[in-house]
Length: 329
Image (tube, rainbow, N blue to C red; front, side, top):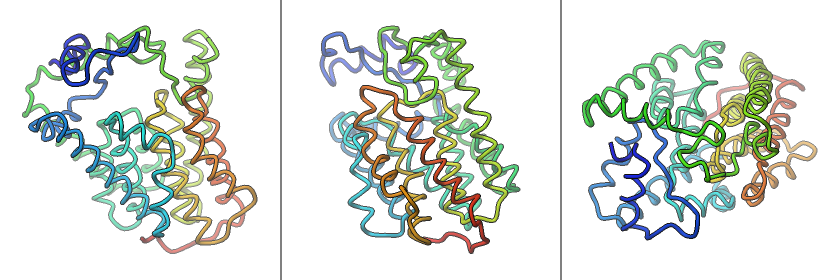
């Protein structure tokens, strides 16, 4: 399919947005076939109305998610502050949807497990953010969520196959095989600042094997910490914040426009602090989470901010943990 053919996809973009500026290449389409189902309805409209509709719809979902997590109207003034938000608006990225599905699935776990599974199934349009969920949910005994997610994944993939044909999977596999393993893109010259441990090592010029070794050395302790937190009698907002941090730390690929999802663990930490009291440095940490995307253009600050957030959340989980009622909006 044209979406999975980098050259064809670039040619389709040319009459819509003009030639690439300088040496900056066109964005490729790195998503699995399921993602085509999400954007296909917008493709039935001319470019500008479709673009506006996409940004407005996904942006509204993102804002509603932050409001639901924080259960405070003032969140409407905080949610648009990260630099990644105007980046998403200007480029039409899918990061608003990523944040909305991630946040909604976590805030609803105590009360709507089936709907949570549906959200997680839809999140497979960006499957690099999902590996930690099955492990944590299984350890926590959230089997209704796991079953719902599995059925949604099957239905989602099946619907994509019916809509676009079986060959769409071969095209996607070929596109992934053509990715440059050094930067996860189809263009060797596109050197995006990847906001992960893998990205930090790439920024430092490390060999590919060292990048993966450093990343995997981070994944294991993060997974252990998150799983332990989910087994403890702590507030649901603390558990949700830990898993949100973990999901963003475990992925090897997160570009700065996806930093919108950083608002999810930050919102859960703010919710936990509001329900009890703010602890030392948490105000500064939340401020750093809001401002850090402004530095992400030049430096892979992502794993450091996420690690700090996870540390603050873990501190709440392991210090004076007490049973609480389920988190409700």
